[in-house]
Image 1: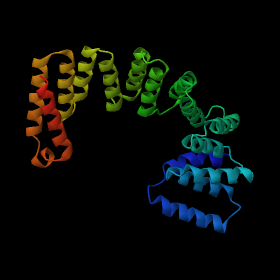
Image 2 (image 1 turned 180 degrees about the horizontal axis):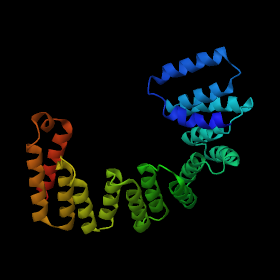
Image 3 (image 1 turned 120 degrees about the vertical axis):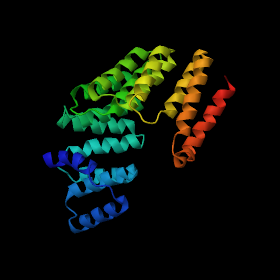
Image 4 (image 1 turned 135 degrees about the vertical axis):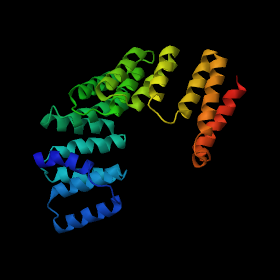
Length: 267
């Protein structure tokens, strides 16, 4: 069983390569050792990584039907069922996994995703809170997800949504994805002072500030502060002008200049 549990980590961090080739190689291994059910589980996860959850499910079901000695296959099957929209089946699979491994955060995380897909936001929040509390190395994405879940449960609950992001920053540091999410929420609820402070904090260590200067101009414009908005746009234009020509001429920079032009029309 331990061997099976380790497969999640081993496959997750396997070297990137051509998944079709790796699936073909795993199929060749199965031909030479057809009774090795772990090979079917491994191929199933490769199918899942290749965005073929239906093929993954076939391999998982074969392994289970032939008595594989690993609880891991149930959480992998739950992920495939989630991808296919088979949410009740996914809950049954993750329940079987957690019966064997009740404190395994992988299972709780997948169950949270299933709850979210079923619209059971309270249960999803409870599971995500548990994962973030117990995880040794939480991911920024999970804090963003939990923040979004609080708003899915109650679209006015900005306090809890922002508190989650504060917790993420306190634990992980100034991760831009968390700061920008917090900025968007502060902007949505009209807390412009906090929104400006977040933009300033994000910009401070950056060598290139043109995009956030345009964002700041738009924020000033939302407040009706046209003078400050115009100043931020000039600063953004100056920042772009100071870039090497190869960066000034790329599509993303040109789109930013178009956005500047549009904002200027509304001043």
